[in-house]
Image: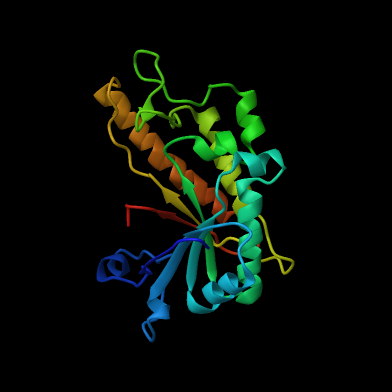
Amino acid sequence: MHTLLFALLLGSTTAATAAAGVKPVFRHKWDTVADMMAMHGQGANVTAEALEFAATHYGQITTAAPCSKAEYAKGNTMEDLTLDVARSLKAKNPETLVGMYWRTDFIGEIATCSNFTAELEATGNFSFLRDDNGNFALEHGHAVMWDYSNKPGVALFARALVNVVSQTLPNGKPILDYLYLDGPDWQDLPNISKARNARLKADKMSFFADLQNQFDKLPGGSRGIILNGVD
C-alpha cells in the first residue's frame, strides 16, 4: 500500500466505559509494539509482499482502493477492489481486523466509483444538500454534501455501506470487520438556519446509530463502525 500512516490502536477499556457498562468494539494487547499499532493505507493491486507484511505485523488495518473513474469504466468499483485487498489480508492472517475507509460528509465516492453510482445517478440531485436559498451546500467550496434530513436519499448511502460489510468469506465470516467513517461531525453551514443545522446534526447521528443496528443484524459475525474524531 503506497503510503502507510501508523497510529496507536485504540480500544482498551477505560474506567469510564467500564462504569457505564459499555463494551469496546475492539481491544488490543500491550505485549509488543505491533499489538498497539494499526495501519491506515490506500491501494489496489497490492503486492504480495506488502500484504504479507501488513497482515503479519498489524492487528488492525483500515484501507480503501482509490476512487478511480478509469477503473469504474472498466467495471471495477471501489468496493470490489477494496474487498479484493481485504480477502488477501484475511488469507494471510484470518485474525487481522480489516476495515474500509469511507467519507460521510460529501457524496464523492458514491457519485463516482461505487456499486451504487448508477442508482445515485438515477435519482439526479435528490440526495444533495441545499441551503435555505435552494443552492447546493458545498464543503471546501466544491464538494456536494449528503442531506441527512432526506431519509430516502441517505438510505441509498446506507445500502451501499451495508452491502460492502455484508460480504463474507467462504467460511461465512465477514470480509470486513468494520467501516472507518470519516467526517462524522457536523459543522454549522452558512445560509442554513441554526435550527436546521441542529436538525441535520441530529439526523446524521441517527443515521450512524441506525447503520450500526443494521450491521448487528447481519449473519456471520460482528461488524463495527469507527467514527473518526468522535472517539
